[in-house]
Image (cartoon, rainbow, N blue to C red):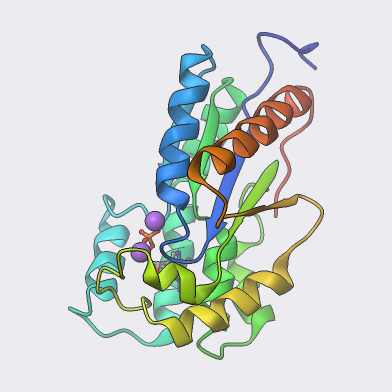
Length: 210
Ligand code: DGP
Ligand code: NA
Ligand code: NA
């Protein structure tokens, strides 16, 4: 163990939520706050559209390609797997990662299509387990009102409602729910506190797997 303070490992902090829940802006705000505190932090996101698998996913999301539901599910998972070793070395090297979406998106979005939840979870087993999952809770109808959707495949309110139900069933002890309909500054404040606590608490904890 590293005895706290400098030298401890970084925290794996994941933000989850529906499309237009405010996740991406809150990730950016949290990242600059933590970096401003002098905390080694990087912002990551899944899908990571820069890899070759990520490009296939991006094409699919833009409705420019069709893929079988299980095939795209496994590609999203592969996109997390291809970053696992880098993720591990960053965390062990003391860098905290603020990650916009992770395995819970993988399960909730695919299960919302009707795929078996156990089947959906299986390829996520062995990925690094987050130290903290923050769910930005926004009503699907409210999210849809926020400047509308960008036109990607899953951005339909009926589908997002099913995603929300599945997210709900995935909550465990590492989850913290923030009311995403609160003012942006309030959400930001709550996120900062959760993140700071998590970073100090996990320095001496071992990394574990999902
Ligand atoms: P984003 O780049 O965060 O807007 O995500 C793009 C879309 O893909 C969004 O509708 C959420 C969805 N998504 C993210 N991760 C996964 C995943 O692992 N599996 C599935 N099926 N959908 C995902
Ligand atoms: Na999106
Ligand atoms: Na986003």
